Image 1: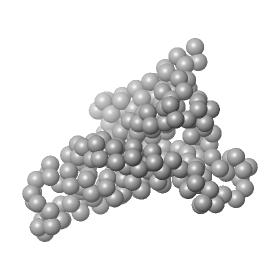
Image 2: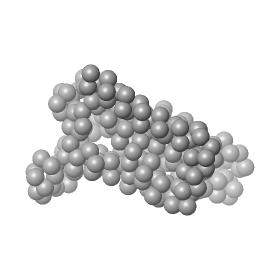
Image 3: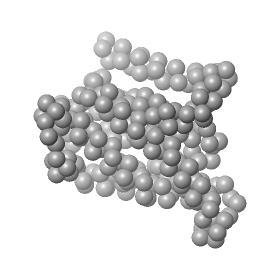
Image 4: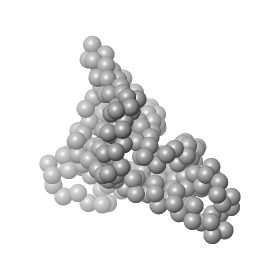
Length: 225
């Protein structure tokens, strides 16, 4: 019963987002608001949607809905990353166009090439760091809770990271085979939809993280990550 209720609530939350985007009146207001306040919009989109991805990941990993410790604080980390993503999308897509125009990249004037180059460069540079920022943020929150808000050192956080999975799965597989083609498509969309679509893709990230952990961690540990 608990799982069915959780499934319903998660699906209902996703449906609300879909309705906002499908209904013309609400879509117009939503886009106008996020265009006027892009960083706040980026924060809210990732605060909600990426957190939904994390919750779904736990559901897949342990077979039931479980509220991770420090959920709100971790959602804030996602929100801050959403603000950064709002900026870097413009930097990488615009930078790719400038590089094409100046002959540093080929196919000047091609929107598809611009989207591919922007996505590739972003996911080979900022992409791996995004995983690090997110992982360090989560680990810092977990450590603070475990130590009752005592001191947490950088070395402690570094030692807790599964670097093999981080590099072999998150960087070499997801960045190359999922995020580069995925963000190429995102960058082909109108600018006002890019951050939101990427936030929806963060739900996929929650699923991928669950897949990478499945069979490696115990359910108790996984529920708290």
